Length: 105
Image (cartoon, rainbow, N blue to C red):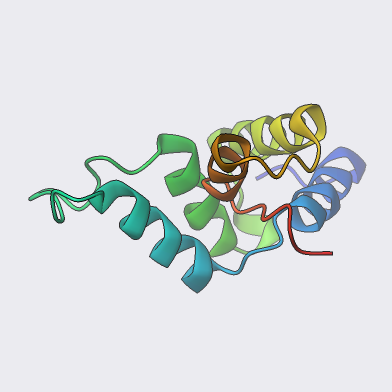
């Protein structure tokens, strides 16, 4: 994909705001999607789409990013910057669904 200054800056900003690793995020998304009903038959059902995109980006190298990946990264950075580090339950769940735990320093 396109490498350049803008991609480099976005990569750095994304990895600054996403402070959960892929294993932590995957476990959180699966637990959140399961609720009390148990896991759904389709592993993607109930898992936040943007959260899945974050997992996908975390598994890539910068040079392998697609336009879709870059769009998802921008959305995550914007969401985290807009919400800040709110720690009420609903806000924290929303932030954690994209890999940002506001309780981490």
